[in-house]
Image 1 (tube, rainbow, N blue to C red):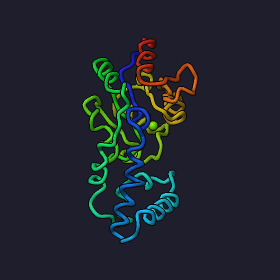
Image 2: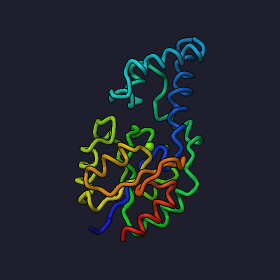
Image 3: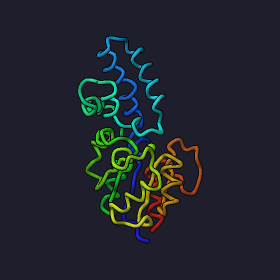
Length: 213
Ligand SMILES: [Mg+2]
């Protein structure tokens, strides 16, 4: 089948994942501390407990709007997230590879990060992507479950066999899209993982793609 769409995970694949952590673990405690008149450390402990209580399997954990309302934080999530925009680090090979691929395929970005984060993460790369999808904001799913990939194909009007996905999560970027009928590659930037469909960076991914034709 002819490949039409190349789908990229975002955190850990296109950009370093630490930017969102800074917002959750530095920016939000800072706002909470100022509002409550407590120390940064105290605010951080309160927030860490709240994050744990909600937990990563709960959609609310991912959605900045929930936390702003729950904690009555000043300003908007977008304001705080934008403050950290300069901390987004795009991996060095990414732009060159996207540039090479964009003429030949439709490029999309698929993440479970909330859209507020996704837009800032992709600020310098948005010109490459025809569509971006947030599993949490767009489909109310905490992970890229099979239905996520099904929805994406429906929206793009392509069959799973016409899509190649790459990302750094062994289950949600490799096993799930594969089981959904896509071609998938697991990106392991540490170079520890081995396998026919494992790549160490996006240049290796591009080379693997060329081998598919
Ligand atoms: Mg990732």
